[in-house]
Image 1 (spheres, rainbow, N blue to C red):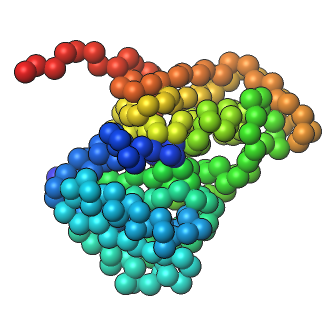
Image 2 (cartoon, one colour):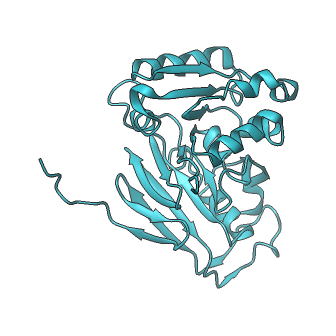
Length: 274
């Protein structure tokens, strides 16, 4: 019997933690509701001693069976068997915000990082907010600047955790005007999709790569698979870039997209029976 990998839930940051908490509630239900065992990993944060307990309080209030904090701050911590053992029995893993380069540098290729990969492959669901979302990509946006128009100096790349090899994920997207840097990245890697997540917005990626938007904002999908021309490899780093033949989709709550077929579809408007 084939085991499906888990669901991936990149969140654009600043998810609602007070009112309806739609995204966090959805993740808890996906992980088993009252039987969920969620591991919070605050490695990306500069204040893990505050961020970890904050999310533990949130998940506990949402009725999970157990929330554990895996406080990994160094590569040595990540290679400690006691750290990876914390993941045993988990139904969900939550990567907090902060600095995605710190998160990837500490976890990628470590014992705990490998254990996260194995857990995901075995069906454990993984959510990440802000930096935790960006770090899910294999080709990862490590740092960058705001801007509407693509330019080579807008973005720096690094290696992420590789939980998805089909896309590059950016966050706080509309709020921090990051469209220019996402298009720049997709010009460099036209075989990959660009996913730009607004705050309080997530794109749930199912095991079969079918996606659905959850939350109050929008998701921008940038597809350069039919790219006609770009001069990104010719212009100086501080100059603007031309791009012809780029497809852009804007999706809001309930709208769907498939990473394999690269086809969007409207939200399901069928009334619920009851």
